[in-house]
Image (cartoon, rainbow, N blue to C red; front, top):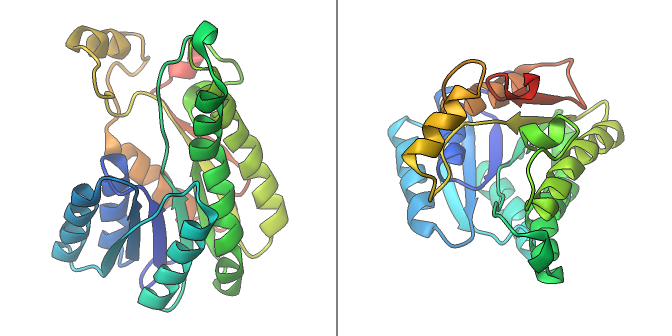
Amino acid sequence: MNLTGKAALITGGARIGRAVAEEFARRGCRVAVTYRSSRKSALETVASLRKLGGEATALRCDVTNEKDVRAAVAHTVRAFGSLDIVINMASIYGRTPYARLTRKDWDANLNANLTSAHLVVLHAAPHLKRRGGRVVNIADWVAASGRPRYKDFLPYYTAKAGIVGLTQAQALELAPRVLVNAIAPGPILPPAGISNEEVRNIAKVTPLGHWGGAAEIARAAMFLCETDFVTGECVRVDGGRHLL
């Protein structure tokens, strides 16, 4: 796919989402980013994209709410006249000890990390099919490796493992018009609250010896949107963490 003039909907426009949006704007793609509570960050992303010469818009969307998802898809199509690419970046992440795990924790993770990706693609699919679109979902290197590795992340891990299966099923359902793939990030950006010592230790146990940076996810997303013959795949961008 040639990205010039294409329209992308990216759920989550901060941090890694911003880097992805900027890379797509540089390639001539028009970008809509969604936010749930971080309006300031989303507007900063839009301003950055416009400085790059791109067309951009931001809108509030709770991706776990089907009505909001329908509205976000409709907004993107109205703004740009089409919808060619969906990148499901929206996610939540947090530690919950198993003994204190509640139904609320389970529902929050499954809805934000898995159901949301289903809803966005479901409502975007008619538009994506018209022009031969692309979908990129976000899994996790641990889930893509097929084993949990860390305790206290049961609902998160389950949701991200579900993303791998969802991606495969979406790829089959939407072929041949739409290609659907996933990215499984490893140590890309340190999460909030992590200590400097933890940052260094994670780099030490990563075969490539360092954190990846948001640009690595942007490059992977770009490849999965430009390819014409890869679908149903989950690409680990983890610096080799899965090898150990």
